[in-house]
Length: 471
Picture 1 (cartoon, rainbow, N blue to C red):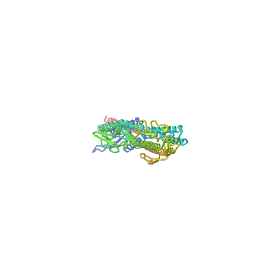
Picture 2: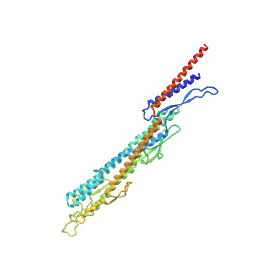
Picture 3: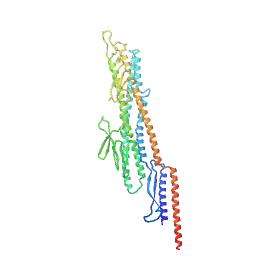
């Protein structure tokens, strides 16, 4: 019976191999599917028996997966997540702040042009009104850009909060799959489909936060943040949430695992969540501070100059009379709901203190106002921007630095996308289904099956011949 048993084991082994080939071909377009195969092992002959052997057996079902390639894919996805979420905000800021008609520089230039025009006839009511009008336009442009940054800060926080439900759901899904994989592995069930699903969930988590993945001996996948805090351990998952410390304090990112809680720095968690946190804290917040510094120091310089001059309404009949002193033109209020800068309530053209001696037509103090554009202010928040900079160049430097940040992010996004694409190609070279290769396997295992069935037919013929001999 040895020849029959050998052939039967070969036919069954070929049938198992054909099953894996058919499974691979059926899933060649399934996203994340990892191709499978069979490990065929020769069965040794019984002890004390002189024979070629006892056929073949399926030693194991193979899953063609490389953990290094998976880790590379996940790291690249995290890097893409960091850069991809930030770029739309940077592009919007750069577009608005560098626009010829909406930039702070445009409003500032028009204001100082109006001051220069007023020097032709300091008593002209239309020219004075133009100064007030351009000052209001300049204020509104500053307010508009500052409001854009405020709205972006709100949008970033909302986007971060919207990431957490899907992130927590994916972590819970990985923990559940760990439990299922460990359970069915002990029963000898093929877990390849479960592992594929788990790998896809890990990939989605890696896009949202940077992760480290360590495989346990029981087949589970344990996840942690780059800084070491646990995300999934065996069948237990963490949950992440933003906790409000108070009405004025920003919400803090908190990780809860079992009975433990960790407060995280969301600028360093990687992925989409970390990219948004880093942008909010290290780009957007300093930019807002810089805009406030421009508005505050410019308003202070203009108001100081105006209050140091006179309205030009001195009474010639009174010796030494200088008339009324100037009053502030701009109100700076960072807490205002309407904007950082406003024209002082009730300010009129006659309130413009262009005179340095109170005499009508004198423009001594007007020249002081014109000179403000060349005076220096301090910008202390934005890296890459000179701390002492001329008022007229402040916005240009800020926009230039913003452009550098945007270009760097675009370059890093392109690099991360290329690395991700290469990592996917490397994974596919090992794990994806190749229809040509499977077609060859299909033919080879079909031949193997047919050959073993022919051996069984030969064995039957020999058996019949033997029976006839004793007939």
